[in-house]
Image 1 (tube, rainbow, N blue to C red):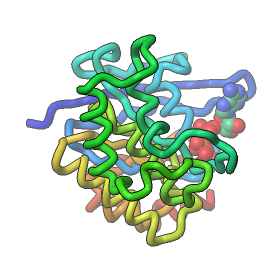
Image 2: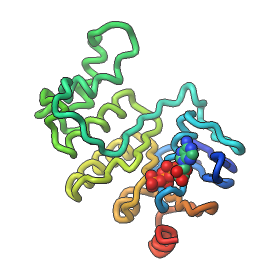
Image 3: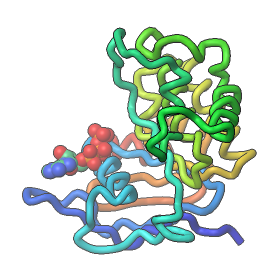
Image 4: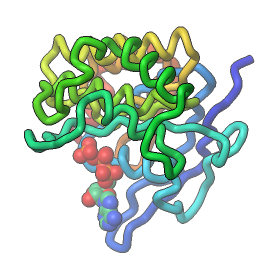
Length: 231
Ligand SMILES: Nc1ncnc2c1ncn2[C@@H]1O[C@H](COP(=O)(O)OP(=O)(O)OP(=O)(O)O)[C@@H](O)[C@H]1O
């Protein structure tokens, strides 16, 4: 039987002026690739903020296995442009997540980890390029490598493929799929792109204002999303 990584039960989040999440329950098992879809403002990022303990729900719970403290979570944000003058190379940027000590240099082990992730995310040939000079697809790959460097149990992609062209979207998600399949990293993928949502996921969560639907991706009906997107 699959082991739950996240068990989200009856989650309710309200801001002073409106209710955003209303009794949302969904489970993410070890090795799942869960696509989360739904129209703008339905609460996808709010859900992520609750999972990351940045926001406390009014009701409901998220249970982490083994527990929140021990769970390693990697996060890849939506594409944002980085100043051309940004001084760090791609390699140094990816390595930022390794620094958990006061030392300003990397240990032998950390260097090994960094070399491995740079290689596994196909960044070797451009690792010394300043991040500010990299293309959009390369920047997103650098964010992905940074999120993966500590071998997360859960990888959250928050519209990370938005504004990439279709070749780069598939390239990024092919990489994610490698880690999902071969290293059993569970993935929560927020997207408006139905093609990607269906191609890579084994599970889906369709969010509507106040009602939710989830299950194996084979049961996902595009018509439901269209209806939800235009509700
Ligand atoms: N701190 C806050 N205070 C008040 N309202 C908020 C706050 N954060 C989010 N909201 C509102 O909650 C709703 C859900 O926002 P959220 O960002 O979770 O939606 P989303 O589904 O991720 O949307 P999108 O697809 O546009 O990113 C929106 O109406 C938003 O304006």
